[in-house]
Image 1 (cartoon, rainbow, N blue to C red):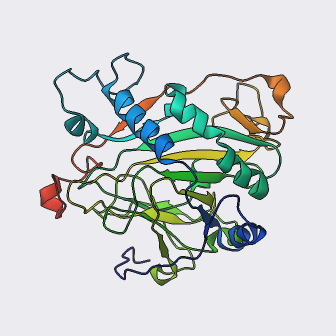
Image 2 (image 1 turned 90 degrees about the horizontal axis):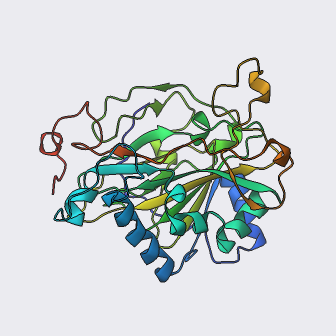
Image 3 (image 1 turned 180 degrees about the vertical axis):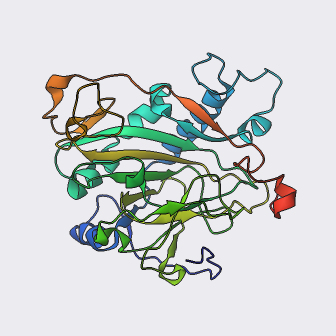
Length: 313
């Protein structure tokens, strides 16, 4: 299907205050996403932004895939080199604390259930001129046994059309189908594959424009994407955490030798609500924080930003 969305559609549907009312849960069940306005305070956002810069400088060498920054290297130059940091909660107290933020957990327990675990965090540093990510479903990458995967997208900057906010296809989660993926050949996007052959068009998509501190919740089957950051010098940073029901096994990695795939259960998790019925297995520290470099636009297949019509500033 065509991958272009040009019409600047807007909608206030799906935006709710904290604590969320009952109709917010119904909206999520029907549409596969909802927005919690002012989920985090300005102070909490400032802490996360400051810690993001500290992590990127990597002075303690905790971050794989990037050398420690020189003392005289400006923050802005450094941040433009990095597209995403995986598992920042392992080296940032601020990111770890947000995993179980009371307002986030309040929503999670209403849309997932009383027992909730987190298994991943990602910090996106989307500088001006950097690409978006093509249509995809998170369940392609984090398979849950009970379809309970929920992404929690925390805006660290205002996310608008110009700087590459999220777009979602409401209701696309209800078919519970993982659509095939393939190469998109579209320089607006990074190297991630694109979902295709789904029974929706780009006219079905809506932008999710939010203020810094807002939190977007979306189902693991919900089709979503983002477009390039075409703003002049502005960032579109976001902390994205993933959660699921604690009852479900998580066959994220290959099973241990002699183990059936059906019984594989990734145990590098953080409990954020309720109890863990699999606690007897223990908790493992398996993933190491690492960087996905931005390069010239976030994908080595594309040329320099100016060759792709993007702002390289």
